[in-house]
Image (tube, rainbow, N blue to C red):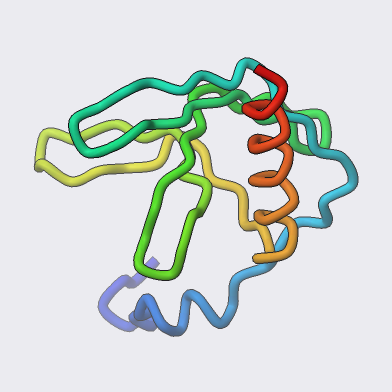
Length: 106
């Protein structure tokens, strides 16, 4: 394949082409709240459509809370996802509500 003629895809173009999964079932297990210097961290295991994803985290961004999937730091200093699931905002909020319900049980 001649890569010199390959079309360069920007992040904006990549976001518009994103396909979201159909969330048929979601379950949250092993919710852990860990105290940290910058506030509490919430870790959990998500079971999405029968696939178990360990070490998910609730992260706070400028637009509110979101699900951060497990990552590792590469030798170049950048962070890379081990796994990623494209969820709609609505589906992501459903999972965050499940996490909050598990926290409230404790």
